[in-house]
Length: 234
Image (cartoon, rainbow, N blue to C red; front, side, top):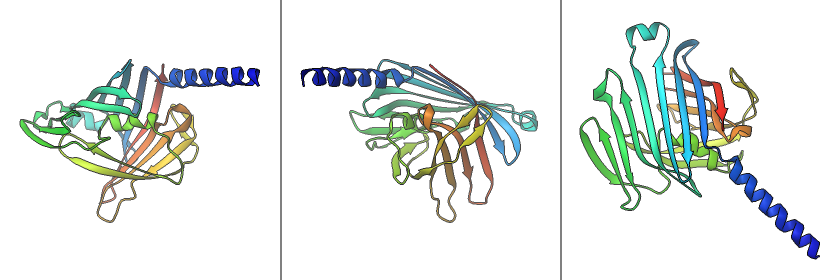
């Protein structure tokens, strides 16, 4: 019995250590962006964790004919804390090169439960719901969640202009071939109603539930797709 307890304790310590080790400190992901079958841009993201703080950056550049007419880039950033429930954003920004009037951001004050939306020069404060993510942190919060097919996922998210509640149904996804490799996936569907835009996300199960494909279909049926082309995890 004594030896069984020692073995159990050792296994518990070993398992706990492996969980900590699995949490990455540096992720670099590149996505190709398509409108229909036409590649229109490339998106580069980086997640860095230092103890209980994180920073996220995302840069989208236009490609092909679109770069001729709209050479600007979109830069998103998110920073905040990491705790047992995952990412807790504090600052978010969305900056548009050559379109500064479209710049927006958000400040999340968790102690005061206040979300400040910043759109160009206008600031508006609303109540900050528990578990709120920003547009960028939401894609990396999946790393910290126990997601299972047959369940649903609900959370509030801000893009700096407004705060919305997001709902996804979770199911088993197909094996997905991407330029970055082959992934077993979970499939998230926003289950949009008529007249709403629909979001579909495929998460790479064996790679920390990181998104490897996403399709947004607007109410008119036009689609934007981003698909993973490179992934480095440290």
